[in-house]
Length: 200
Image (tube, rainbow, N blue to C red; front, top):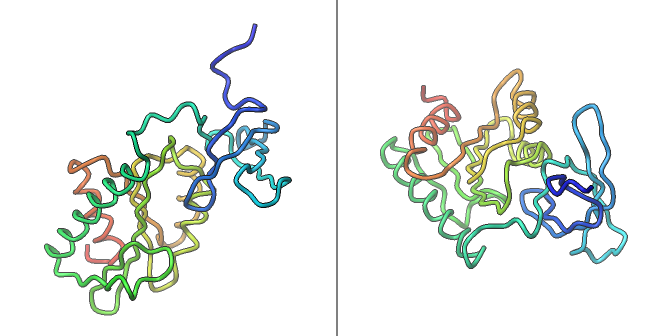
């Protein structure tokens, strides 16, 4: 008897974390490791038909399991606009400056400043469940010594991503993560900005 709850299975089409985005893939193999199951996935949307990647199995989403609205693009824009409005309100309330769009670094959706201190903000709306540890590693790459980074996303972290975030932030915190589901998370957003800019 086959257990329908087992995921992922070889041959199954999935969304694969790819930097801070997602790409379509097909599971080739799933195998256990000391840090949990890993999956070898062939990348379907690649110019190289043999392109594969190995990722934590819990970072994959079945393509048939998506439950977003009619248009993923509209879902993303709606989410991003809600978060940007909250960031603008926080910046105004705290007396922070915001760099113009033309001065933003690659990968930053907003940069807030106060005096010589800055914080970069990444806004990401994902079509799948908790973010993987690989996504957190990519996010950490945006942090530089004088400018920490905050990721605001619509989903939480896997246990392995949470552990990687803790390791990255030793001895000094440079990366913050805020899950945004609506106005009830405004306090968490404001707190992360205050901590990142050392205003607390």
